[in-house]
Length: 243
Image 1 (cartoon, rainbow, N blue to C red):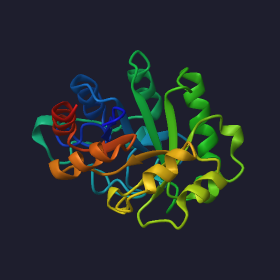
Image 2: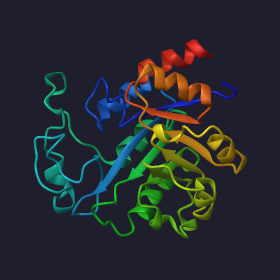
Image 3: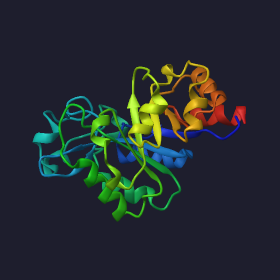
Image 4: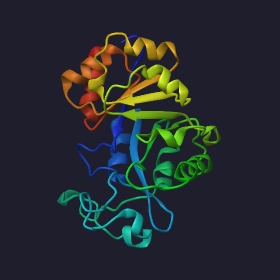
């Protein structure tokens, strides 16, 4: 590895704690991850709640759409995903995670989950919360909804373009949006010179979701800027072995 690849905990240390919870984020800090990736939806009363899905059903004891529920109700649901070791775990707000990470040096990747639900102005709301926490130098916004980033210079935060399938001339495409990074499915990085072309344009490559040892080894050797992984402990071990 010519430069050290960073390790970002996907939804926190989600291999050992319920995803997108304070317990998962605290564990990522304890393990020594370089960063955390999380997802944000918005409640009916305008709160930025950390949850991946548009509904409460999969990861909590609640049900229904996040956008139709108020925070006072959402905060009461159990977010342990059925794990008795975390019974009583609750969802959290973005501001709580910012407060947790502020004393650290960790990077925070906030994915805006606005591909299914439409949250007008959520990007600006997130940026304001980041500024209030004094963390503009350590936060990157990402989304699969690239259109919302067009002309978003007022956000004042670096942008990462998420994608699943290989984008044609991705370095030019990302440049057109003013993106600081691309966040590809790691399986799209098979083209030999793709990383070189992106890096030549000053665009970082943060690959997801890399959980298997062989895939982690490949990404570290290829020189991606960050791996986003559920398996933080394994990733740290593999990186140490290769360094």
